[in-house]
Image (tube, rainbow, N blue to C red; front, side, top):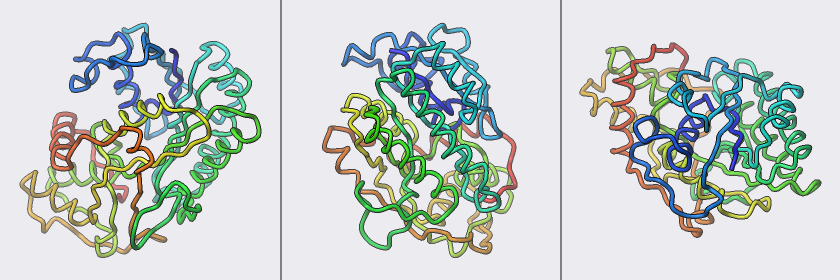
Length: 341
């Protein structure tokens, strides 16, 4: 099976490409994911090949995929999903059986400062990709979305049927892309699935995001800016668990279904930051409260019982995932970003 992964040089995308090619391809464990055993299941997963399409914006890192360059089961294409000619050429030449669509602008603060790239990439780019998927009869189209399309919730958890209520230009653009994907199923019969995940964390995440920013600044003894009172609640999902969830969804019908993916680990931002400081051995006095973000959602929470009823559940406890994440950033030592998390 040949899979086109858009945004495969980004955080979740790169983890997913590595995950796939170790689990189902011929790439050895020491190159990819040594803690992910080979897959023994549906034979359609045999001999997986991956084509990665990525524009290599500031959030993409070609080096993340460099260990795969010597393996014939992976091909990297530098290109932008907003460009119809590029997308058409990639699908025409590679003839993928499936598309996993990660490519997106995703940093909320950047969307508040300037939302145009979010609309052109997340909405227009998705439309371009959908057009090509129809043209070349892609058998499975998996669109990776976010819990932020639902907005904030004080109590309880959002199910997949809850109306869209996005707060930021980022989440509004993702809601728009969701609707386009589902419309292509209803109008054209394109086989699609939409997944909506909670906050991911783990290796390979861009240093502008909350956890890597906290880790790197703490290790350097720098102040850690925290929006508002720090009591905004997020659910945390380890990226390797998310990769396994997407793999699991691949074996379910592509009938327009939507699946929430959650870690069921809800933590206020300040508590998460304090736990990281404790694990690194830095004083909690490094926390610096700053003016709250515009339109800052207070709490996200997903009801993922639909997906769990099919047999998937996350495996990684938060403490374990944080320790692995801290160890990865300690080894990699990427530069500190001054963009607020």
